[in-house]
Image (cartoon, rainbow, N blue to C red; front, side, top):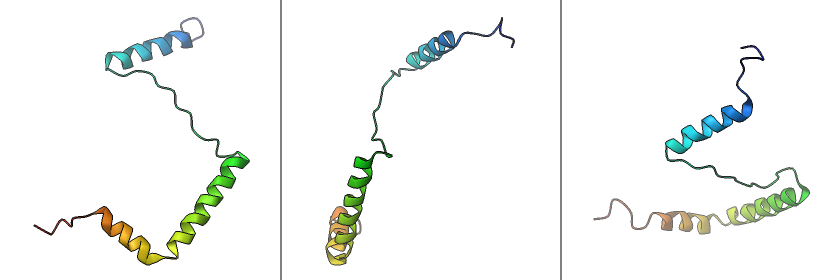
Length: 76
């Protein structure tokens, strides 16, 4: 396509959105944490340290994992 026959991006976007709406979808905007921010990095480190501390107590973790599947599937 040359520049004279190219469809403007606004029209392409409108056509794509119309097709998605015809499929029963709607646009949605999502906000996610900025993984490069210092606050995120600090919180991720705190979370990782807390998880590492919990992992030291493997009996507690085993109990929590077992409770997740209660009652067992093999029990009738």
